[in-house]
Length: 217
Length: 136
View 1: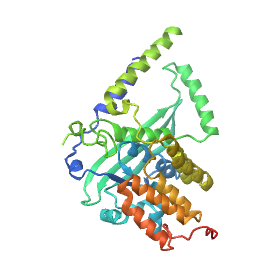
View 2: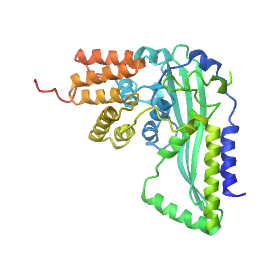
View 3: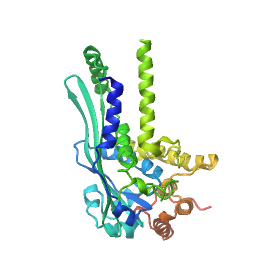
View 4: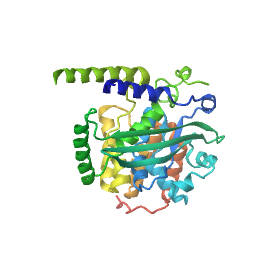
């Protein structure tokens, strides 16, 4: 199989295989504003949470939602005695409405944030789960889990090229920090933008209210 | 070598066409906001813990959008107002909280609370400002 077909098949797989989602509850509570609370980090990589939090506002806002200022949100939550994501994720939903006036809260859990070596290849993986909840009813409006991976040593199937690439990548990884941001951004884009299973356009997006037919009831 | 290049280019363009087809909206080069240095400033806050860089990034974001006529992204004025407050500039902080709620009415309940806290000499995050502004 040529690399071209591999890429095409991968794209089709990403788009086609997701579980079918239903949007009746979403559209019944259609949120205008989303509060992103600190992500829960289930990995052993401590810095994953901080790095992830810098990636989420932009794609959500570009989807058309009002996204509350995330750094200010975190400071206010700390002031309320909620310094940790684990505590924040336990707070009753209506409290977020009282405190912030938010329509919905996005709870993000970081499931994987790692770099692994498998024989001659290294694989960097970011896996994130998302749950969007309505602050009036507490209902789950939308949820998904997405992962993004980058493999080193892609020498086009040539074993010697792969070996060299893996050696070079290994040396580079030893010297510099691995940049996980592009993978986090990719996972976000897959989650929010994938047609039919992502987030319908929010009120600041020109497609708002016009794209319902793309999202099954 | 040449044919391989050509093949690769064809592969890329095919992929692009397919990606446009399946992602639909993502294909149009439509951006709602001018993000300026907002994400850079978030990285300075979260990862580098560099207050000065975070502040200058926010400042550039809210001012550059004024110049280019693009829209300032949600949250930027609020974050900038909060940064101003922490630097001991409550008056300007209030201006930016007001600007956030004008641009995005969804933020009004929170911005009103923050303004009330700043006016009442309390701090939005429970801490006193770093320094009081000298009396004019």
